[in-house]
Image (tube, rainbow, N blue to C red; front, side, top):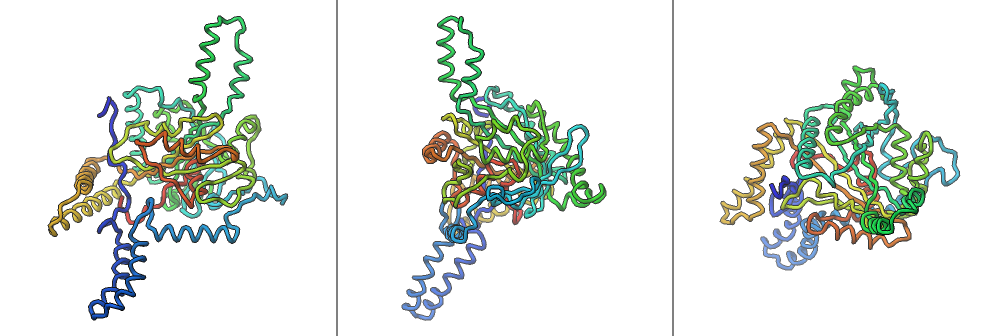
Length: 496
């Protein structure tokens, strides 16, 4: 406990730590194979051949083994090649069919990039809630739904109240671990850009002209200090589950989309109570028009005001951007706006509940900030397997170094202790959760987006590390800004 708040540690552990000198097995084997053309000539006494082979082998080993901003150098090279190929062939340029003047079906989504793999069928009516839009990820074979929450936030809560919310969030994630249908949850918070015109109009209509001069001066001072950073927020939550877990109960419920919708509705009905326990005053499951509007305002924040009065909402053909030029490596531009996206890396020293709120602190009227946290609750069986593998790996590395006469580094001793503590917690009945966090800042295209991105980095410096998603800004935008449940890669190998 620090200052009355619980400190969460061990959040910065990588899913795939290296076994040998920080290398994963595939990297280690590749390095060994690359050294053979050097070692074999040396064994035969051919120094000239070994030297010639080393000129090619050692740079290749560096590409495989040296990490650069979270990715091996060879991965960066491959990503750069694919990025340039996409630009050369025009794959990265986007223009909606409606903008070109082509005939379009209003109910057919016309979305770019990562979103093209999604389908959005409407399920049958859910009691008095109407139809809920299902999100079908055809690549990951997942089904889900999104709700919009009315929530007061945590900025004005005491440490004790935040602690209660943290416990309830843990309970909600624990229930996901014991549900076969839904295992992932995405919590997305977006600020609503406000130039101040709406507030000025309200003040002009409601200000008392006969108010005392001192009160008027105090009100103007509050406008300059508090009003500049007081912004509205949109809160979305998306629950998704794998097709293999939904298929059998869906077949019993009639099969097809309606059968899958019935299965999801049963799970969502129980999860709504957990959201209310987290302080949500209202939980509104989005229909197709509502989700299309959430996607549209993600791409074009300036359209939020005009869309609020439109009924019945946005057609799917108009949900995406009108156009998105060829992206740069570090910025995603869409419909006259520019967005910079980051992955949020957790600190080794730990963090407290609500500490990410600094990423949503708008500094300039008209900018939009977004924060998305993606959770996946592992089943009890998978959690036990994962923590055992983690404990074995940490212990094996430490024991091997000790047998060779090397002392274990402090980070390795801490990792081994953390692995043991995690295994004991899972054995005691606690759950294990994978998670990833992403954030983004969006400004009008004519602004200097680099200045605003630097300001966001400064706001959180010393507490979290922001890893800019270079060469993947369009995918990062989907992960950080749009409430469609995309953002957590599939776990391969079963080790966190």
